[in-house]
Length: 374
Ligand SMILES: *Cc1c(COP(=O)(O)O)cnc(C)c1O
Image (cartoon, rainbow, N blue to C red; front, side, top):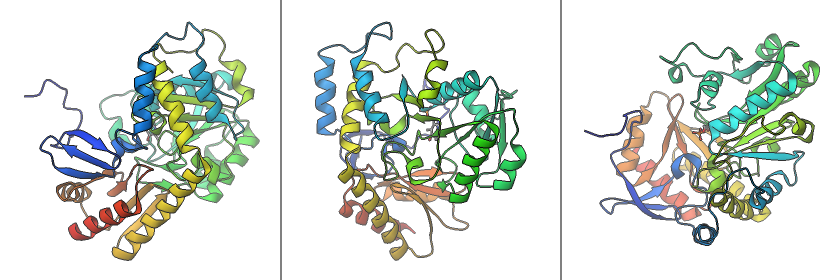
């Protein structure tokens, strides 16, 4: 019997080594890793440049706490906000923590506590972010929930209009719902969110924990929409596999978090920010992002050509496929057996999350495997 809590339905394999898109399990079996540790290892396994950064930083300091200046945090924050309307960042250790910071900032800044979130959303597993999440299965047995959140249908303008009022502190959303089934926001809904936010003085929080840092083919996914967020949360891809999260906000919100208002011991430590800095350098390059878009389009085209009966959805390399009536768990298991690692999402969607460095040959190979098993 395992000495671990059985809170994860773990696959019966252990990945012990890898390089780029390729990973090997404990028996030496080779896989194409289109799971990337759930959109985390965006530069693949054992990326040379990241390995070097970790080694070099580890010989200097690892952690000094937020009692002291930290130029690495300044460096990463500068890269994150560059080319956007945002003004400053706060570092933490995970997506849920970044969202907690966002929720606290929105409450304190507006003096209100009602936050609108959406059905099928996923924002994390802490008491606050669990309550924000629009999926009942995440909440079972953990009640009562924090009352802050009003959870309404996604991409439903009329429902949003009905839910709005002067008591709304913020509207919090994923630009593409990841865990909920790879569901992108519609343009009209994005417009409606902007409009409602202005009309009622409510902030817009985009949870880009999964969509951010190049995953959808732009630095952040909201940049492909008209959305004008006040706050953004990041994590997953930011550290290339090293745990780090960040909350980003506009200058107008800077003064709301003064000394002593919020914090975390580990947040933005040197190992994490050293890696994140290099991740930003690589991914925020225009050519690199262009290639992510091309590879996303290539993957979509290949799936639609080889497997025309499948429904495809998503953006960039956050890609979902679905077929009426299939059992996604068994599809996932079959793919794994055939050497392709994927992730399930929402209502029977299979999510393909290759590293952003994936090659077209690897995409061909993955589609070939899918065709065989389906
Ligand atoms: C994964 C995820 C989270 C939670 O991140 P953790 O690091 O697991 O806390 C929050 N929001 C979104 C959109 C996510 O995909």
